Length: 203
Image (cartoon, rainbow, N blue to C red; front, side):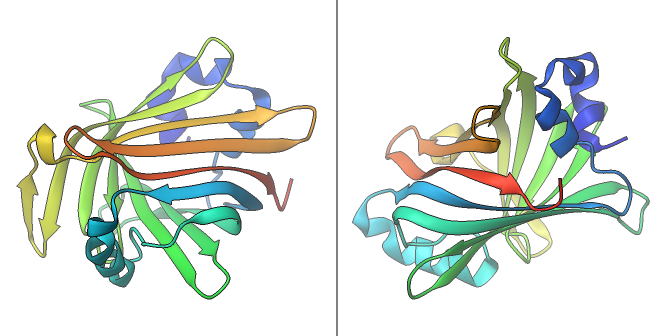
């Protein structure tokens, strides 16, 4: 059973059928997809150095634009401690640069959250909660977050957090998945946002 099916429980059956297929992740299988981001935007210009620094960890990046090709590869794996993990590799193909937004997710079943370690090596940690809308769409929201400094993890007050909201659904008419991710901060506003569509490569 995938970590997403486990955390959603009975809600999983209410997801659109193609979303169920996307988030099953049978052992040893990967989900690969190709698409286009209709738009990618970021926060104020003064944050440019921080976003540029984030590229060293395959985390955030300063580039933005419209109609940017991208690929997704989600791979299931098992950690040394036996924990099930899903590796997320998101690659954005800008005209002059290739940028990444990678993460490693696992399940904390006792607290009913997905642990999301962002960057390689991990630079940022966020707890995620999953919901299914009445239309069968998937919604994801962030909760507690921590900054990772080597072996030290520093809890972040909400005023310094990047609050994440994700909506994903399947468009039957065109046979594509739609994704919209927004990261905001209580003081700054929008830090990072992307919205686009993609098709699975293997089903």
